[in-house]
Image (cartoon, rainbow, N blue to C red):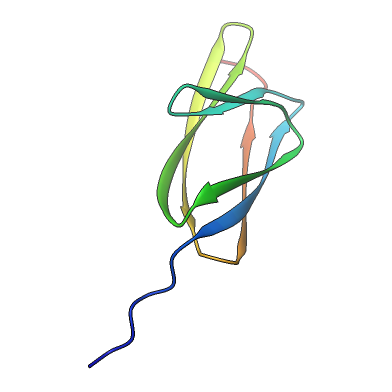
Length: 75
């Protein structure tokens, strides 16, 4: 039978223009730019800068690095 898909953490390189505070499921990862480690799978990143809040979906691959960026200028 087929081997099990890889599991375990992967990294996400997160950026926002000009900057934002990033969190996943309420856990704060600080200000961008930042590299965060998340379990493999689909995650929604939440970006906050003042009154502007945006979200971005990422798919984390075990042992891999993906990137996400958002533009926080304007509403």
